[in-house]
Image 1 (cartoon, one colour):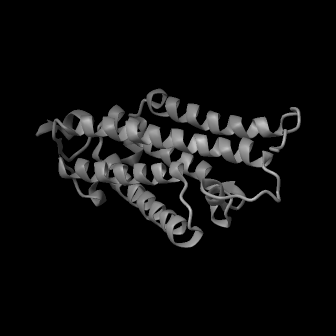
Image 2 (cartoon, rainbow, N blue to C red; image 1 turned 90 degrees about the vertical axis):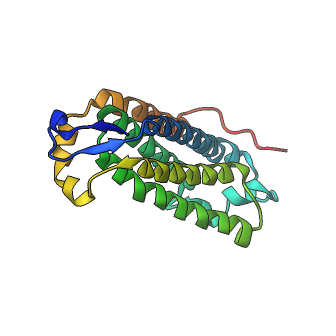
Length: 211
C-alpha cells in the first residue's frame, strides 16, 4: 500500500491507497467522460431531431423511449440530467487527483450508488413498461454500473478514516484545492450542454420536417 500521511497535508489522521487506486480513478474518469458523451448525444436528439418529427408520425424503438412520459423531469430531458450527473463524477474524480483526500472517495459512494438505482429503474421502464430499448440509454445505464463497481474497487484498495472523523475538514480541503484543475473540464461540459439549449432559441431557419 502507498501511504499518504496526514501530517504533511495538515490533517490529523492517516490513510493508505494501493498503487492501483490512481489507475482505478483514471478508468473511473474515462468511463464518466464516455457516459457524459452519451448524454450529450441524447440531449442533441431531444433538442434537434425530435422537433422535426411530425406530431402524428408513428414512433417505435428508441424514439418511443425518449419521447415517453418518463423521458422528462419538469420538461428537462433525463439525458440532460444525466449529463449533470456525469459531470459531477468527473469533477469529483479530478478533485481526488488534485488532493488525494479520502473524503472524496466517501462522497462518491452514495453518488454512484444513486446512479445505479435510477438507471435500474429506467431500464425496468424500457423492458417492462415501454417495451422498447434505447441503445444509448442502455449504454448510459451500463456506465453508471461500471462507475459504481470502480468506486467499490477503490474502497477495497484503500484504507480511509471514518466519514465522521473527516466531515469537519471540508473547509480545509476546499482551501487546498486547485480549482482550475478541478473545474475546467466541468465548466466545458456545462457550457456544451447550455450551448445546445441556447441554439434552440436563436433566430435560425425553421426545422424542415421529415417526409
